[in-house]
Image (cartoon, rainbow, N blue to C red; front, top):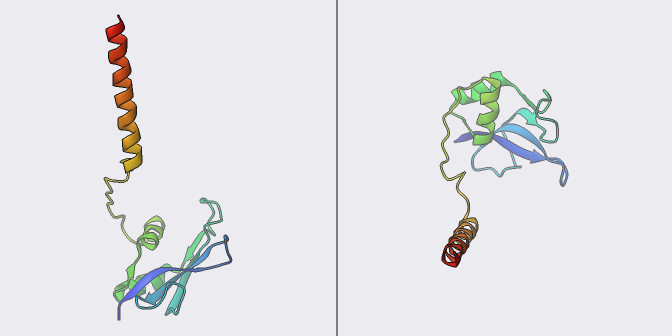
Length: 122
């Protein structure tokens, strides 16, 4: 049985609240879980200590049993100092999308055309 430490959403519409849970990977996101390990309230300010609450001992226990944290939960664990920080590299993050690239090319072509027109008028 593969175990994940992940977020399970609760709370009402437009008011998210998450439980950090240990769950079987085959169960739905908000479905059955094995144990509740903490909470995450994204509506609180980032410097609030109540924003992320978790039981570090139980999380370590589940990780020793082979549970894998999801990316978001691993970021919480890194911030809490439970696990060491991983090196992340996303080189495509800073590149603009296809439409923005086309707009930039059109703008550059228009500027080059304007520059050649100004040079020929002199």
